[in-house]
Image (cartoon, rainbow, N blue to C red; front, side, top):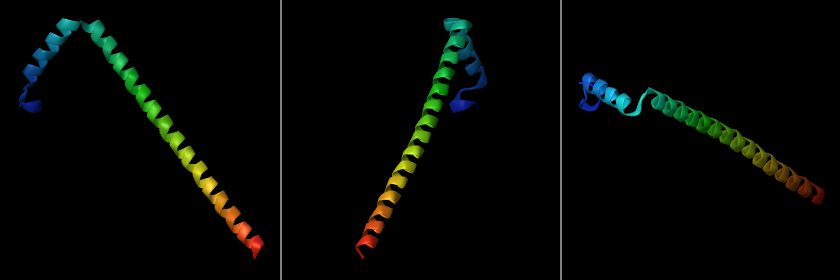
Length: 78
């Protein structure tokens, strides 16, 4: 028994039928297109994570600056 009750011979037969229907050139093109799409997706996700962490740092700096300014104003009043 293989994956989900499908044996290895059934998988081989399905693979042969798919290759006969689409041809190796079209399958190779499809594989490279899919790989390029996944690579682009991963790159976009990494860029988004870097952007989010940069935004978080800016927010933290702004909050720290405003807190410092408030404490300086209260010191000036005293």
